[in-house]
Amino acid sequence: MNPTVSGPAETLHGLYLTLRPEPLLTQDEFSTFYRSQVNQVRGMDTVARLSLKLQQSFGAVPFRTFLMGHPGVGKSTEITRLLERVKEQHVGIRLSIATELNPASFKVFDVLLLMLVRIAEEADRMGVAPLGTDSTVLIADLLQWFGTKKESQTRTAGSAASVDIGIGAKWLEFLGFSVSAKAEAKYAAERKTEAIEHSIQRLPDLIGLCNRLIDACSRKLREKTGKEWLLIVEDLDKTGISPQQLQELFIQYGNVFEELRVSMIFTIPVWLAYSEDANRLPFERYMIHDTPVFDQRHDAHVEGRAAVEAVLAARVAPSLFAEGQMTRLIVASGGNLRDLFELVLNAGEGALSRNPGATVIGPDDAAAAINQKRRDYRMKLGQSPYDALPISYDQKSQKLVAVYQDSPGNDMPDAVLYSLLRARGIQEFNGTGWFGVHPLVVDILRDQQHLSSEAPGGTS
Image (cartoon, rainbow, N blue to C red; front, side, top):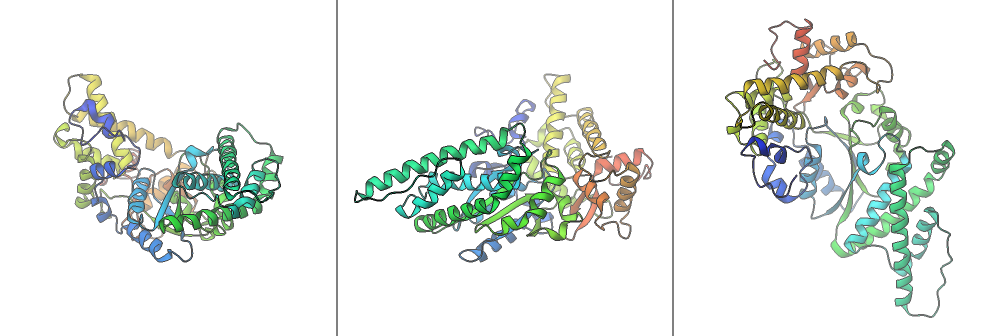
């Protein structure tokens, strides 16, 4: 978010400043743009539950969990709220798999390496790096891992200051090698099978190094602040990360993360919790649900729409919408904030492209943006390269109709359900686990005559 923005856009030309999709990270952004109403209609305040769990685990066993939610539901912003709630006990370190690693090719040892590097960097920034004389062996072993020649540590009758300077220099050397290794993991065009196998064979060593660094930095952190580390591993639900990668990370190598002596929260896609391997996931799962714009009977969900409107009004002055168009775009978004911001921005840009002097988003502008977004959703309903086995559209349309009609067994997990969850054609609501069909997909089903042309729950 642009730091100069201090309130909602007052003109269509200012929409791009306040409708950027980045999460709210700073306290100023949070106080300006965050609205709590969405949590009041989602069925439970997941952040309140997580903060309680972290408080209970403080000073005891590390707390590890999965946080789920559709892309655009606001997970990263809710994590900011969580870190604010637990800041008296925890120091949060946020890691983005999608931006700090290569999302198409990362392996479990890359994630561990990223954790190790980011803890070291944050410890260095906070002045809690393990630079005491008792850390010489740890630093030497870290340097060896990063390809340096292990040097023998000799202790003489020299001053403690000279030893500390030596250790400090080696710590800086380690940071330099670790940054290079992180860059290699992100930008390497390809990896030889032998190199991958070699790294997998060295996993136990890397786990041990991670824990030794965690322990050393944790001691220093507690001495200085009385707090504990909390790792937040984000963006595992981003496009480009395949189901096979996630299943390898958490099913095949889930025990790796169970061995780490630090509290962790991983954000994962909703579909993973409904896959056939869900019962093999190593940690408990918490959900940030979608915000409903329709209820289970396909009537307008008044409270849900009002909550989404409060979020939008914090970013865009309601006067920029012709009568009824703000609600129309909210309904078309299905309550998904990222989709909503994109819809409004596209509608505003469409209005300006047709008339540079336009002052409001009119019906034609909203219709054009909705039609474009509906095309996007139609494309997602086709064959997906991420499905383990081909799933026909006939299978998907049957599942969508069953969910829409709340037919018995419509919510039973299967490959079709989690394919549709991944495509965001199906949403999950209100803590009770009921599913609904996205309003844009209801439009598609009506156009294809899978539903009556009068069936409620669509965008018109």
